[in-house]
Length: 130
Image 1 (tube, rainbow, N blue to C red):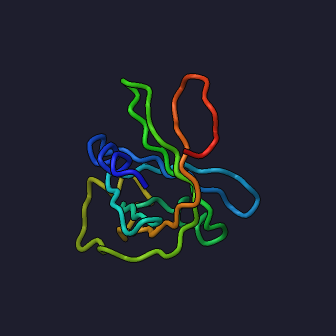
Image 2 (image 1 turned 45 degrees about the vertical axis):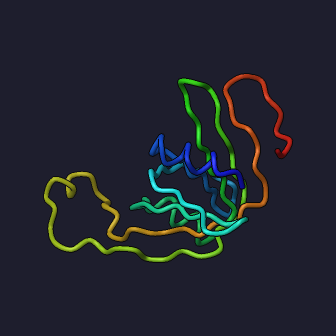
Image 3 (image 1 turned 90 degrees about the horizontal axis):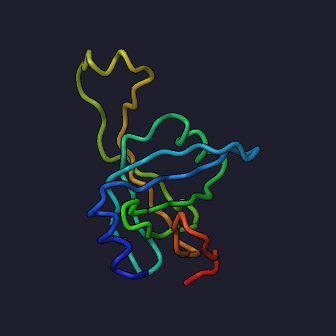
């Protein structure tokens, strides 16, 4: 994968994580943490909400979108979550978070094997792999 994919994701601190359950019902999460793991693998980390985690239990296919809305330029990465690893567990009571139940209790790192990279823009574009 191109290094500019990761530099854009790290610069924007905004990577959309699209999942779907076994029936195809979609859900979108977001993270600011993306890193290259190997030539075809990357990691994204976040305190993902229950919808994302439930979907990944049923369906490991994922779409990651890194998009600079000001320049209307970015990437969509299509692949499969190879593993889900706990990175941190909430420790202690955070009353300000309790009002927004359910509160994620675990920060997860998703290891994604990327099968396809395509350009992403709001303008008319092709979904042919780069």
